[in-house]
Image 1 (cartoon, helix red, strand yellow):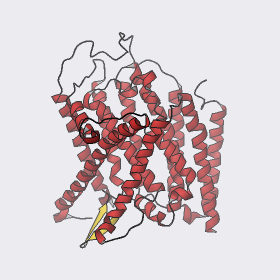
Image 2 (cartoon, each protein chain N blue to C red):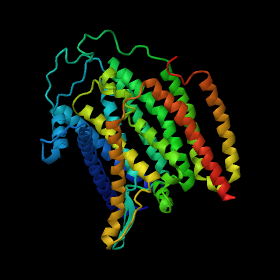
Image 3 (tube, each protein chain N blue to C red):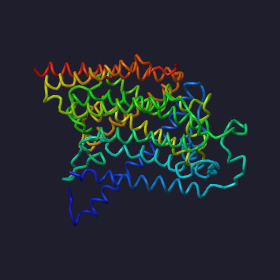
Image 4 (cartoon, rainbow over the protein chains, first blue to last red):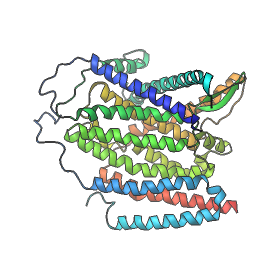
Length: 119
Length: 342
């Protein structure tokens, strides 16, 4: 059963080694002539003002939250889709109700303006 | 599976397979970049790279060598650990998802069966989605750790866009899963032996492909790297090979997404098979590669043709159009399937 996961583990180890090796080697071989200006954050040639990790738009949080809700819903759809053919009308009605409830929530967030980026 | 004495042999076989697949993938990535530069150049009436090797064919090698020996600048105020982890994550995750992609039919030569696939998971599709969606960490961490305003904004935009379109990406393929009744990529392809899914699920395909283009941050959804406003987006502060790793990750994702589109909607390796046994064994792989190549070309063609979206348009398109369309597609597909089964 878990035998089919062994190649993935091997693949993962190989990928990690390859990625680490080329990243480390490249950082090691490259010339190093640092200067204060070179090491400052890029800001189109102007001296950077303040720290970059400041406040940003709340909309990004909102998108994150909505994503989790809907992604869980889609994750629920997959097992249902796999066995759908053996469920017949029962499966259809079950999922229809599920999607309708979800759509109600979707229409609510749309109406509330959560999907409008410029507000 | 195997136990005891033949375990080392098994591991060796797996290693060889992984090595070959990775080598092919990395070469594909390198030459996808070359192809892109060449095709976009011709679309814009230029020549593109032509100095290094015939038709500039050695350009990827030259680029890789150059970028490898460049100075690796780590700006002073970055979060060093996270800053180094981000390209590493993006790159290794992008290369990992190829492991469940079947490249062709299994062939039996002299009693030994060869599977053109590293491993056939029964939840292959789910695995690809899981791994590719982890890729957003690379982008978000890179944007945050760089301590540059451009990087932060680019990273935020990028991750918001990627998670938004991931919903549609998932919804687009639910119809295919319903038809095949399986999450194994091999079984999904075998189910299409009569008719390719693209003819049964055209809406699903359009949703999937649009979301896939957005998911890989490509034109017309390449706002995270909108040069005119964000310099380079989340990888503004990266240099040397760390920068290249983000690029290779992007192209690896494009290859994976094209492979998936081929497998889910265009019948994978299915195609006319004829001739002597050897040709018979290799033709499916050839069909698969041809289809994937067409998708790569389409990607480049889109890049050479379409202008960029505005960010609010992009989010509205994903949330207000693709998502409800995807739900509708699932409902209609399930209705038709239930109707047919009775």
